[in-house]
Image (cartoon, rainbow, N blue to C red):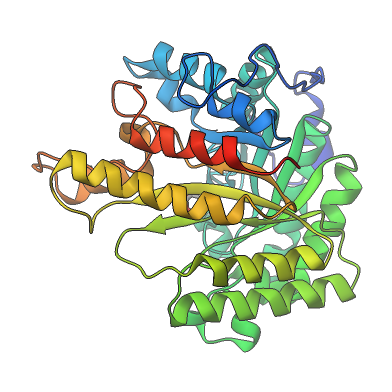
Length: 378
Ligand code: GLA
């Protein structure tokens, strides 16, 4: 943990930090794709055989649980990239005005580097996930700290992440603002320009990384999904017109059992984004199974079917270059943790991911493997 002393420049505050040795992020390729479902195949190797980078969010705190060794092994075996789940979120890195906490992120990059797994840095600027102390600042200071945060993080990790989710979730129709932009301190500080500004700063401080604008809620075939798709597409067009240095569009894709989907319609929207010359990254895929039947096998099959329908449609689009799950094993999912808090005595828990609580493959794994095997190469 570093102390960001008052009056000390950000740069000076960081000078005492241990110097970072950049680790070349190379894709491990020890596993070759054969048939889906065979023990030698992994989701990572099946994707790699088609030119698709397959990864998942990973959390350092999970490695400290009793199952930590098996958790690490699962990622090393199955994945070709890791996304920071919490380690780089601003409340972790800047818990207070005086503290810069890089230890979890340092451990994360060390682990990923040791195993040759490229890192996706998540996320630099997000109006919905702001440390409390930022919320108490005036708009001028909030803007200053947005800039400072981008510079501080990228100075430390420059060249070590293959991609950064630079701005997360810029749209929130429920805030009822022009353009359906999400309210928050950075929008208040700079207006819509907080987005282009963040990308320009990110390019300046980490020129080689892919810079990504990441959005949620664009998948559903309901009014909310439609509002997200229309507002987000308009925003992306404005940003492109302004020359904001965006390399890829991230679509989170937290799918939900209780929601209506029309994947051809969603794919038409993805194609519109791709036509603007952006790569597409699916960044946070999982399936909230809460509205599916109680019977576990029936539930697992429904989850698998939704993965299959979604991936068959979206992986047919050549611009989709990255597929990332939000965690890999059910008991490490945010949905599982959320349910444990909400229903502490419940006997069954969410099963949103391709691996169960024993790190064994579920029907979802096989459906995903089939979709990867059937997709056209990039
Ligand atoms: C959002 C965020 C992620 C994570 C997930 C699930 O979509 O982008 O950082 O918080 O929700 O928790």
